[in-house]
Image 1: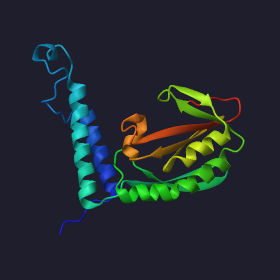
Image 2: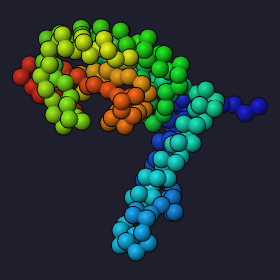
Image 3: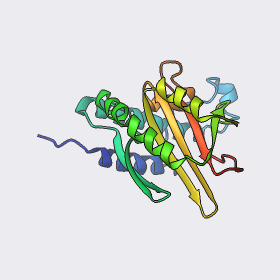
Image 4: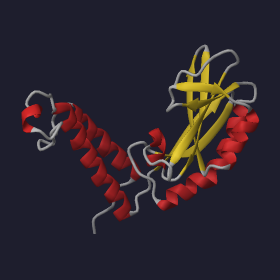
Length: 202
């Protein structure tokens, strides 16, 4: 019996394949930019061919995940203001299985509590207009958003004189929640915490 690839191995395979596609070692040659043979001879389609080759490979990996019940969850850890925290996240290149979504839902309250503790004295901004703008938001508003979402994610961006802690509050499938791809069935709100007087940069 063949052994099933682990989550870590699938991430490794996807990383290698992505590099190969970016280097042009994998091209999906039947992809055309416009669909018109006359126009396509004037348009460079190599970038699209590289992108499509990788997307097809990624779709095959996602099917493998579903067929073999391989989780898309990876465990991350961060330390903010001396507080250590470990939390689950669906790897950006993988999909969430139904059990993964349950893990995320179960971790939501601990992520929310950690974020509240770490950002107690920080300014809070809601990401609006697909992340192009940030609007100052009150703690009570964050709590309301948290109450009507299913799961949470974190991103910590830190430099010597700058700290930004992003709380992703989502619903539906994590792989479709970013960039409003699966809206309205899946989606996310992003709340950015920064030190007083600073503005989000992510």
